[in-house]
Length: 338
Image (tube, rainbow, N blue to C red; front, top):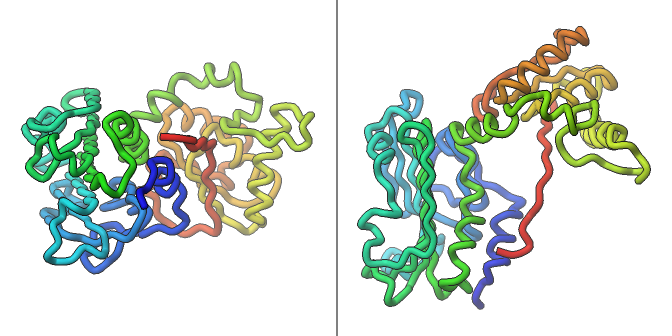
């Protein structure tokens, strides 16, 4: 039975189990998300069980001079099967000091000879800074690389910041309800899960949260809580509903005075201050926003909570240490259709 785009997206966005791997292992099966692959990026997987078909690695990840290329195929793909009749996932991760990274900063796959005989349905190239860029494109190709047979739909994504991340999904048409009118939009949903590289995260945070603290103060409540509040009962003020949300998180975690909490995403410090003041615990919290870090640092000093709250300015993928409980919350809206 053919999968619909909606069901494919639902599966992709609602996994409850994950494969956790810092590097690709040819002896593992992959499903869900590869968390913090090579300590650089979270990589999404299509539904199903996937195995390594081809793997090429070079260099040292800590040095930054490395690259990894991996092709994954469904678990039940046989050694003599023609891969063109199966879905494929291709990943490339290239370190900041790799010659391959420099090369790809001037190389646009969507405009390359890869798809010269195919029909490009969507294309988006956005340059960022000196040589950094993001691109996505969707093409329909057959095994000869032209559009006539349309055996597969190709979704191609690359993002070159401090590192280069490349992902392409090649979906065999018979497995999906994809067509020339809808697969471009589908690719945008698909690749939205990949735009969370270390460098990409920093750029996104700076572009939004570093607008100015004064700007956010004009329309947030006095707790400076920037996510959906809990209006129970319904007549609560925005401030009281924000405090209810913060306290509900604390209650669900059953926070005790001897707990040490790690919070990923400080915001303007509302959770850390609430948890410490009401429950007496310790909180280590991290943000990569310069303005938020400045704001919360001043707040901690003003409240005299330096011994209770440790404020970091690090990407969550760089954190180390041992904690009793972790907190990270946001507002998430899932698409109802592709």
